[in-house]
Image 1 (cartoon, one colour):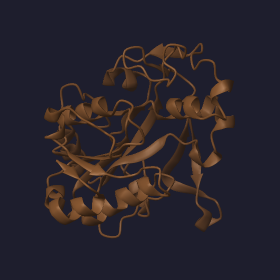
Image 2 (image 1 turned 90 degrees about the horizontal axis):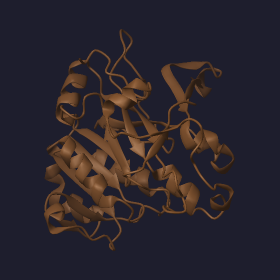
Image 3 (image 1 turned 45 degrees about the vertical axis):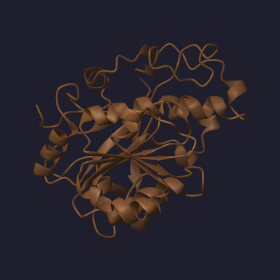
Length: 290
């Protein structure tokens, strides 16, 4: 179903937001939009919203299963403003998820369990948000894939990930409790081309709507407990988002494209599109969910 704008959707169809979990796909360009939508439908999201430019065309079978909403993701603050408007329109407690096109959510055992099962367990653990790691994917041969995107030949880094304490400016810079800043992947290897405030790979991509909740520009929320990686008493589930977004940006940006002949290096490995590989690499964990 098509909607001319987010306001038109909220006016005509806001009731569908009660049917969670809801996936928001923020479409920045026309690369791998269809595969992104199909991947998240297959995970079991009950409602999928694609915020996309008017030029996007989808197969009829796919367009009939989602809400296609006219949006310009390149407008100032558009991604955060879009997510926050949807949060405000949702009944409190609704599970939401957001990603960009050419990004694919994986969670422990996602081949055999649905996202609804995942979030039901997480809710039972009294958690309102889930930490996700954005894991960079890239094509190994940029002469054949100049936009750095290849689903069949995708690679990722098997090492080079690390975490630092997250300082609290309101507490003399002391570390925040159960919060870390995570780094790695292409943002780490090519950090000279990435602004310092965009180098983190952590994203609270799965979360429950709440009154007054706001997404901030750094992918954290104004309710600090949402930004924690675990509850105080044990480790919790985490998930990963396999993403071509940084690779695309580095190759399509004139300021970096000529400095990067390849993303492949000694620690590149083929991505198998399996949750077990991401768990083996320490890029997500099942917590108490077996």
